[in-house]
Length: 137
Figure 1 (cartoon, rainbow, N blue to C red):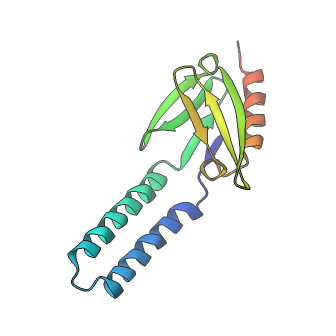
Figure 2 (figure 1 turned 90 degrees about the horizontal axis):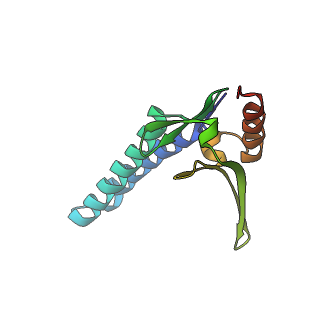
């Protein structure tokens, strides 16, 4: 099973790049500070979109364990016995509710939002629990 980012995310980031470039041409004039600021934003958004295009699958699971994306675009394989807990972390702050899938692997905790997974964290947690139960011991 694989969970990947929603396809709209890298597209939105690339649209943001175009918007920043258009705004820079419209309003920066000859001000070098505005051009540098626009360039920094464009490079940041391009890098963020590139990560989404290089590693769209954020979480994959099978009978042996899970593979998670770590850092910018590297992967880490975790066997089921390395994962201490899988849970959905729910928080409400200032009227906004967030849910994150949390994989606790002892020395590291991996968090995934619904945007990272392309599915609700609760559904993914249930699927992972089913896979873990059916995994050979």
